[in-house]
Length: 288
Ligand SMILES: [Mg+2]
Image (tube, rainbow, N blue to C red; front, side, top):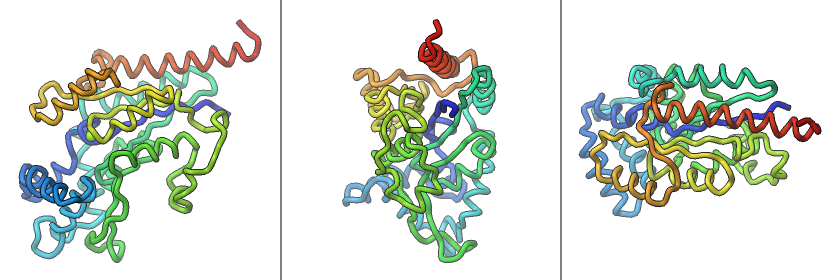
């Protein structure tokens, strides 16, 4: 069985600027008021952050409301407009990595997105269709397939992101997980897991990524933090300081070209992991 390396990305502000903010702008909703007043108010009243924003989105759907009769298909169509906003060096990075890994026999690379954003938006992008094995994001549901969105189907907040790292680790596909949501709790000996944590690289930008970074750190994977130096928001700055001071991970601007810091580190991280796996195999066979 081939060894699998998994490169896992957050989506918003990691691969593209925040997609929900763009969706709001597109429909004439003021994102500042939405995030800083409405969501904040819900959170203060006791809502979980992700459930607050999803509920507020639903409150804006229907008839003459700003999001109109928004459907799943509308979200996918909106997602299809986002590829032009991918950060520099994408999607070339994904092609480069697949090419590099192809030089090593019996090793493959898989790409994943774990996001607190809306899954159909991400799945609507060309980059997700072309390059990613699975996308995990929040989901809304309607009464009938083409009907307006009415319900929260899945909310991925904070520590829940780590659940999907374990699904990837244990080789549980999204289809299998939806048939049996508790399959992730199945006990599988460490050496039998499909994607060992040492073969995982996680890239994210926000507070919701902190549990994933911790898990990477504790279980032998690698974490890369994304921070836009042009970012003025004080929350981002605080996170940046927190991550830097605690040396949880290294922080880089979201630029993925070969000549960029992050783009070059990710290429190096993947290739050196491939070399380690190859060396380990040769040693196990009594070679070198
Ligand atoms: Mg993010």
